[in-house]
Length: 135
View: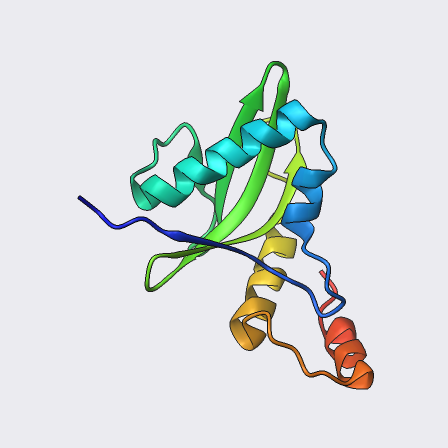
């Protein structure tokens, strides 16, 4: 049996977690459905069916969750050691993922790769990182 993956959410220097905040902002049924798909992703990772996971760039992937006429998308990337890092989420009805969302996910990925959710404790340094990161 293949090992399961670990799910992490990117935390920004200001303490916000864009992907988790997106899910938590939805109604309870939609949030529960997305969480169930995140759990599937944790268990299956790279083996998850193509209709649910789509590769957008060399590094960014999209988890698509449909609920009735709504489609929710979470953008994420894989890291060695069985880690899946979720960057952001949004709702979109068309098949095309907006380039601005992909660019945002890439910027968040770069921030995570540089700091791994551990930022300097001083407010001044945190603010400087926040200015450096403007998706």
